[in-house]
Image (cartoon, rainbow, N blue to C red; front, side, top):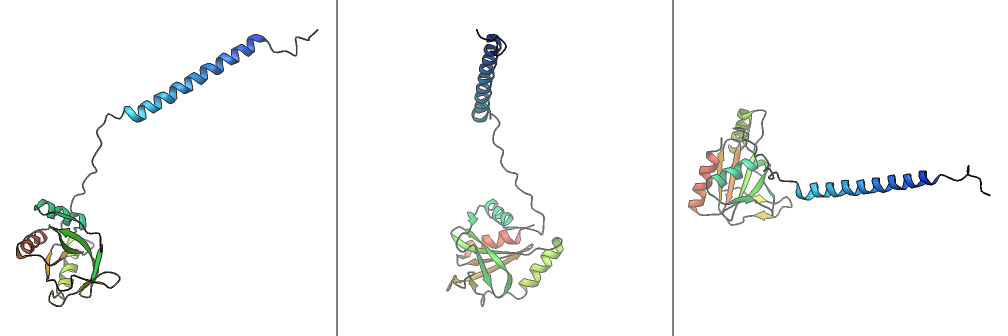
Length: 179
């Protein structure tokens, strides 16, 4: 004869099994709800990142490209080379492609707009496009044999490599109109 003390009651085991099944079904339900919410409940339209505002006298490369675009010129970041050095300006110029021509943008920082403009004016005093050369960081010449044209405005000096007079006039207008 078996001792009833050592055997669990049938009702206790059955109750634990029902509880386990209910919790398993609840976990599946929560997982299904999470998957649904992840894939289908995102009705909110994606937000565009906020375009930073330009601080007059403290333009960055994005501000210059936006100014070219606003003027109706096709402008984009240059990839190869990304920057250029010149012996006439200490800071490297960042490459921008404007209507299929290279423009190198030299920006000058400062503690405020007046200091940034003063730094640009000081650097521009020694710039001579007739003797200027541009080179990659590795020393490869950029635009050899091309006419270099230099424009300045706000805290920016722009060097246009080649291009016709109409493009030069448009680039000059954009650079000189920078806030």
